[in-house]
Image (tube, rainbow, N blue to C red; front, top):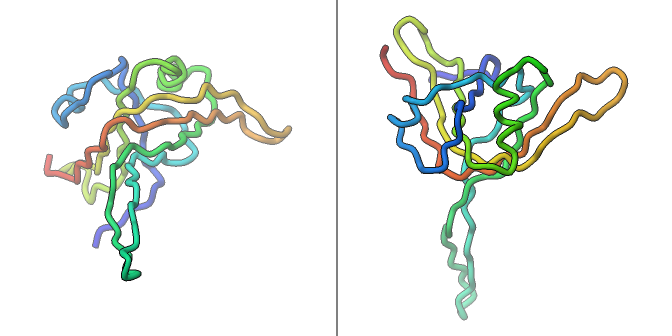
Length: 157
């Protein structure tokens, strides 16, 4: 069973807004800019509502209801020269941006790609650093996932 650490994961943002749903091929054709130095990997997922009621007999019936994109955060150590951070910051209250997360899980990077997750998200927070004298300046971007993520498992090169 292949397993990997989050260490080495990279997060990218497309260079331009992407207001419409994208296919895997369309995601792959975008120009990607790395978002420098995230401190944690953001959750590119969805959440479903659970609907449950009780029958008169007392039996519970449960269903998976409508799903929507997760609300997540991406914290980065501020870098004034990072174009990727600038793109995310400029997207605040704008159109959805395409994001790509790439694990570092290839068993052999010469012959196999890493796992990639594509999605689109709205940027919901325009951050500023806070903290104490010995804290690294970090900015936390709020993200609302607006397209079901596409998981691309490692493939032969």
